[in-house]
Image (cartoon, rainbow, N blue to C red; front, side):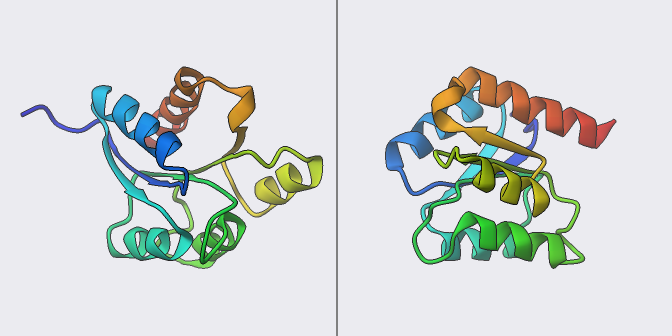
Length: 129
């Protein structure tokens, strides 16, 4: 069996979006786990940290900003690459996400799944170089 290009945790409550990214990333050789709410995402993140976190902002139980802030304060997770993938496109939201430490802020409506994958691969390449 081929080795994985990397482990990605996707925290996304929209089943269609989650399935689309899970399929696309799996086909490209990534191991991808999906959490459908913020609490589940946090449990998965802390029990088995991924190589990259793809995080929605608007989530049930615990929002993405809260998770992002907690990750950046955790000594074991603080350097984890995090891409926010969200529909929140207002300037204050983008600014907040970047100030909290997101590596990138991706507005779902502005990027195709292929462009999102390019951003993921760019961040992962930077991490291993």
